[in-house]
Length: 488
Ligand code: F6P
Image 1 (cartoon, rainbow, N blue to C red):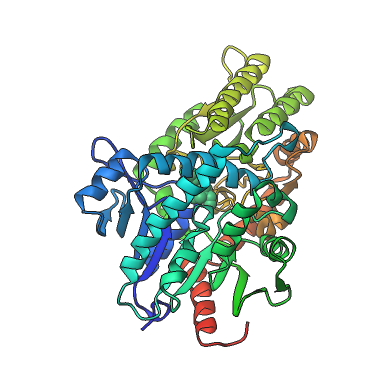
Image 2: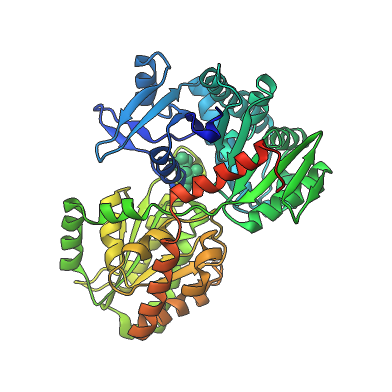
């Protein structure tokens, strides 16, 4: 029995479902990937192999002799996890020098070419002695877990693991390898900044997969184009296939849905109600909300500048509207991210100073990751701002409307994966156009109640059409189809 037919699935990603705190407390891993995979792991029997990302994770991994164990989460759910501890120096190069910022920057069009990104020995070594080492460590754990399984199915996730499939394939030609990439796939020229040898290793690693999944058809198309232009391979755009040696790689789009039941359950928690009470006590007539990781791709600064312009151009809204920005500090050991946080705080101070009054602070900046606090705000926003420059999917754009109770309007960047599904009912914006963003804030706050309701109902309808169970079933169905040798 292969795992597409019911044997435990082997999932592998850098970030796992849990991280361990100094006091021994277990915390849910953050981000869209974890949301997707926890949904997946709760629908199917699975073992989840992930990196031990903190010192506490390493200690817990050691306690279990590097073997799988069951991790219970405080708010429910338990996962069979295997945490893999890599050499700390190698891990630092992997995470802080190569995966972020290099790959992440390339795949979000963030690399500032006018500022000459230099690739020196440090970056090349970060690939060789960091990225590849962590991929090898995780591949070894995968091989141990599938040992003895016939035609096992391995599902790898995201940009951290591009060379892992090649390593697994070498030892297990019979394995079915599936890889889902949660971030955009950019156009061919963006990849030319990487040294040719590194670029080849990345593409060769990925092409060892049987199926590669993306959130959208546009990332799927970009990947096919890259294989044709950068690797000189034959591709079939219509059927979504790359021909690689004797092997066909299927390239597909599987847009990630949210787990509506899980989000609604968070909305009902007493702690969420406490945050809501506090929010309602302090709210003005209108509430604008954004919830993001403090990541350069999220375009936080332009969002605040647009709010500044809006207040300047529409002074009648002063003291009547508050902008709540809940931003989770992220990847703070990467200098670009640490500096970005400082710039965010500086811009907020300027806007608050320029427009604030003794009893009104225009922007409330909350630098933390608190799910209940975010969901309390989702229920109560009038405007949800999702203005990422580029974003693989963006689940906030789906979770917010699901639980919103105020006919809130979504302002949504046309460069998010979510826009392919939700664009019709959102106010679409070009995230670089600050005046358009400011105008959209005004349009949202002055829209008729009927139109707001129509849009929100439309969004709720779309985000409840599929759930993570469907998402995984669509992928497993393609795995079975390909295993059986059925057409595309
Ligand atoms: O897909 C992007 C992703 O890997 C998601 O898990 C999440 O949005 C974010 O990046 C998390 O990043 P990190 O694991 O570096 O905190």
